[in-house]
Length: 419
Image (tube, rainbow, N blue to C red; front, side):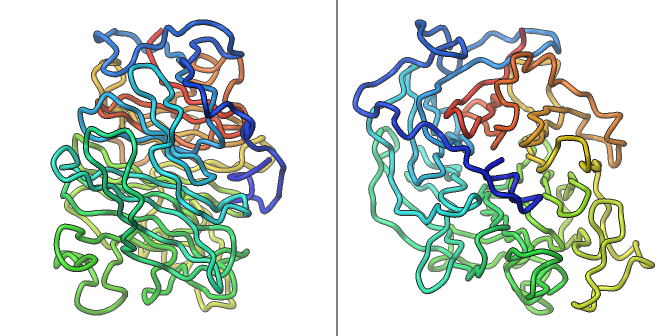
């Protein structure tokens, strides 16, 4: 098990994408897993609304390398695929374009390193700004958040980089990996606890004075390279000013509900539990408990002075969590709340999955807590051929809020559709 399996379990594996894929000839996305046929995966906006909750995976392309997520500017018909090796690829009018949108010299030796996140400015159509989350190696590892620009209609971006934020990171794991804009127009960044077991030697989980183990919020529309929103909980004192939420082990994928502004977090566990958390709109400052709690269970790493299981009210419990021991599961992957138009009966459903099992599950975004067994398991319906089994590296949405999944080792990207 590669990449995300390491996030949860510490085990390494050798699965990779297809590094030999032909990058010189544009290829049509093949609608049938296994390749070979002509395209029937229409480009976005691709549908008329279709009622029903029986879902399927529609293959968009299987010719990319180690895809980890997808993104797109608002109302843009292109799909931008993030490759962990440091490239952003473009699918346009059903074609995987031969020239990468951008190539970044990332450090991707570790399973959890490389290019991990991409987001476009809400006003990209006018300003051409977009942001990435990736790992660099100087004298040590660093999580880097950087800004790039492009002509909004161009299929190749400018290579000039503006570094927005760098966070020293001594280990190769627990980097977080998401950069995204909230409904409030601020930029949000997920950062893990720094790596190592039991909150590592640094004890970042319950330390308010570090950027690690946090969701950060910054304003990239003012300041140079950014300013801190005055409404951040610790904007003036008490912790790092950028901190928005904390007590997280490895929030690899986070996603905003475009309808409500709620922030959904998939926090990857260590010993037993994977958890799904939420920060409701107009709230902030939540402490999700790591390493005092892992999911609903006491975990306390005493060497960091984090005793506190007898005071659960100091921490925010997950909306749902699952014990993955002996189940074939390993790392939660947050998908977010569906707000597209093609699947009207799925609007308002939270999608999440697991990297190792390839499960895809849903529940209503209005609930504050739900037992894992009460969430709806859509795996057998959506993926009867096990195309994302042990490969589910990420979810993402296009410019019309339609939902996609990425399969790491096969280099495949799928759209979720109604059958």
